[in-house]
Amino acid sequence: MKLPFIVSVVCVGLIVAGSVQSGEIKINQRYTGVSHPTMLDTNDDGVFANVGSFQMVGSPGRATMQGVFESTPLEPGESPCDLQNVPVHQSYVETFNDGSMLFLVGTAGYGCLNLGTSVFWGELSGIITGGIGRFELATGTWTVELEAFFVGQTQIAFTGTFKGKVEIPD
Image 1 (cartoon, one colour):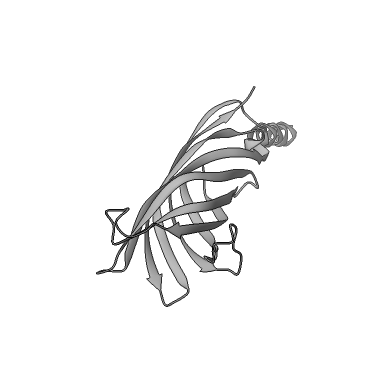
Image 2 (tube, rainbow, N blue to C red):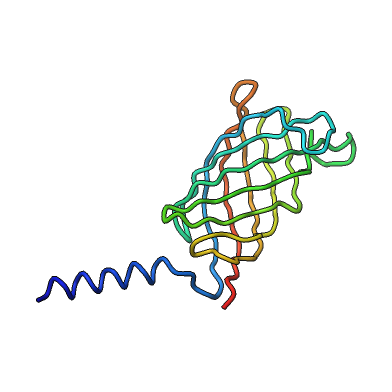
């Protein structure tokens, strides 16, 4: 008699947990990851885009983020950094362990390179343009603080924080 009741409660819990919930969800994650160059030039300026994959931990859950980003250097004297890049294209998909996804597009940012240490740091920001699963119809904003390290001539290792606010409509 108790087993059918327990199975019913577990099934209802799974249905509720997998459904879209309206309201605001805060993003507060740390990440690590690696990017690789491609032959894709999103704006025909001769600078190629990178493809990155990042492991995310924190709220609202463990996830993997993958994306494409391209930047262009500023002219000398336009920045307080030794070398500074600004993004010209950023698009990312964050996939959570439950299969839900967030779609993200970058709108602003910068990256600075210290020529003495070869350490790269910066900030990026953007908008949330949708999702699936618990993030269906999501909108919102996000920011990233990053620190990066060159590994050989083709890989860049990243670490930092990813924060944001997701709005789910009623």
